Length: 390
Image 1: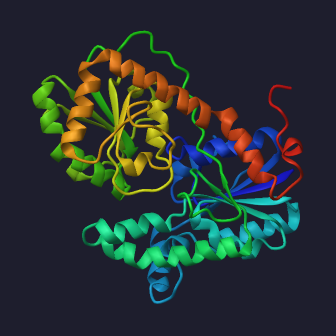
Image 2: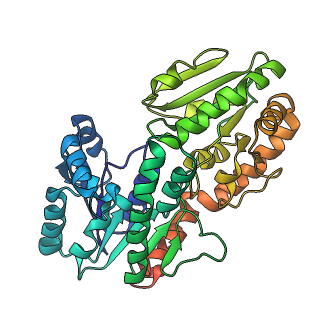
């Protein structure tokens, strides 16, 4: 099958879902890539993609902001306007005309403006999640100016998502819908993450780990809540505990929090070594949908994890079995302290969490899920994705 993979960025280690799905498609199909770049660094990243001759379209930041400003008095979602670069549309049309792909794979909501332009070529879109739900949460709970962004963006994104469902466009999601709210034409394709366990001994220090993209408002909000509301209590009980924050482009408020055992590691090339040294991982996110990659990574690495109910609700993990779940500071202090001071309990939790991650999010598990989704736009899945064991 000929697959045209279109993304508003370069799939990379900081966007692992995009990269892993691209890797899976390349393994079994003839794949071409068209994507947006905004810097020379991203152009260099593109040379590491598993495709030959990727088509790269420059996205100017100020041009994107201008498109968002022009979209404000309309009903167009700002996320859509941000990536609605004319050169991207032209490149996709050219590939469809000259190469004639069997299917166009659109990556995340920022590419939804291309759905109609691809007709009559079949399209599948990896939304990852119905993102409007997140912006609805932001509108209800975030402070100024984020709640205004949520009020503007939520209804616009929902209208476009609903339209995609009405059009019958196959949609990939990283987690199932809420029971009773399932939408037709959606396929659960979880985010793949393989972590070869190399830990031979338990960590020698009580290290708590947070991993996340720190340009994302929900990550910063949750992290600062944990530092302010939970960390002092944990340090009182475990005075030598350390909190390691590993993330891209940490804002000033995070950098200034690097006291009282808090360490910040910015823009690291690989997060895996930090999981190997961690005694516990935290996912203190209060706004979000789908399944957080940081939860998947921690459990796949065999690190016992504490998370909020917002994070675990759709993941399918169980409190006290795969993870510890709490939404209030006292519960978080108790849970993290338990993992730092009770090695037996921590090991049991880690083993069950690892089993869940492998069963749901290993490459082989996700490859089967991807085959089910692609069967909606092509031949039977056995022809699309041959058994990798053969």
